[in-house]
Length: 185
Image (cartoon, rainbow, N blue to C red; front, side, top):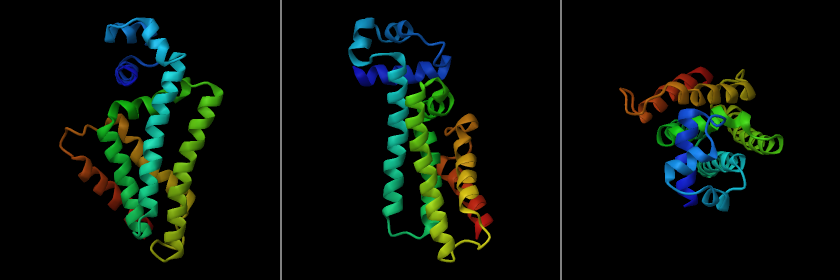
C-alpha cells in the first residue's frame, strides 16, 4: 500500500503540484482512509521527501556503477548523460516532482537533497577532471562549469521532452553527448 500511495501521489503532485494536493486528494484517489495514509507517512512532506530520496538515490547508485566501470572518462560522461535522459524518460512524473517540488521540503530535508544532488554533480566534475588529466578533453575545459552544463542541458529536458515523440530517449542522449563531448575535446 505504501508504494501505491507513493505512486499515486507522484501523479497528483505532477498534475496539481504539492501545495494544491491534499492528503484527502491522495486517499480519495486510492479509496482508502487518512488513517491508511498516516500509517505509512507522518506527513505529506515526509511523503515528498521519500519521493525525492527514491529519485536521487536511484541516480546516485547507477552513477556509481558508471564511475566504477573500466570505461574512459569520455564513455563515463556519455553514460551519465544517457542515465539522466533515460531516467527522465522512464520516471517522467517523478523527475518533474523532483525538480519542481523540492522547494516545498523543510530546511533539513532540503539540505539533505541538496547534498545528494551536489554529490552527483561533483562526481561528474571529478570524471571530467580525470579525463582532462588523461588528455581526453581539452586542456582549457573547466570541469566545474562543464559539470553544471551537463546537468543543465540534461535536467531541463524534464520540462519539454516527450519520450513517445519523434526523438527516442537514446537519440536524445546521443544528441546531447555529441553536443557536450565535441565541445570539450
